[in-house]
Length: 150
Image (tube, rainbow, N blue to C red; front, side, top):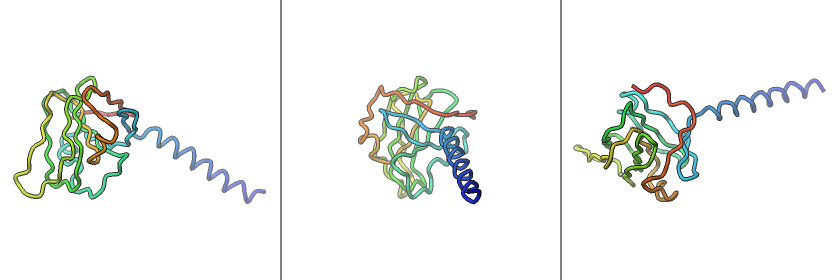
């Protein structure tokens, strides 16, 4: 029986660790859908964004967090996948959307602005916003620590 005890304990320990790690991973909820996110809270992270990615799973995204609310503008330079760009205000209400934004193929790259001040910007795979029925006024719930915004 001892030869079975060690593997069982290892399995239990691994299972508990995976659950604890998953519970602390940042995520957002929008219209009842949960998305695992990467956070962009520094200038460098916000500038790099999802550049050079060749794939973005439907249940993943990147949340850009700014120190204060202001009109925001994004571009797709060196971004290889089409995206939905969703802009949220201080209260995390959806105030503007740029949908099915294509990768930039040549300079100068177009700019995709918010049509209102935004503090949070969520990038998702193109088509995701339509498939979940996202619309202005929807509230974004942020799960996990955002950390320090620079």
